[in-house]
Image (cartoon, rainbow, N blue to C red; front, top):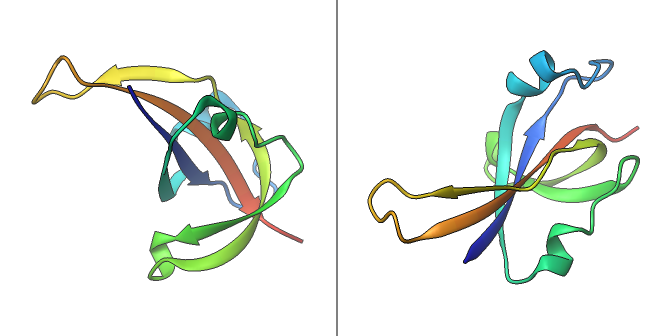
Length: 93
C-alpha cells in the first residue's frame, strides 16, 4: 500500500473548521515510504514544503491541523490502495 501526505494551505487567521478545511488550497503532495513519516507532523511545527503554487519553491509553513489518515482506491485499479494524510498549514511567522 502506498502512502502520501497532502499539504493544504489555510490563509493566516483562518480557523481550522470542517468548512474551512474543505476549501484549503493544495500546495503539495509527498510520497512517503513508511508509517513513521505519516506521524511526524504536529500542530505548531514549522515545516519546509515545496509549494506547487510557486514552482515547487521550498517554503516555510506552520502546521495548524492534521487530518485523519484516510485510505482510498484508485479508480483505474481498484486493487491499488493509498493511505493519505492531510496536513493543513499556514504561513510561518
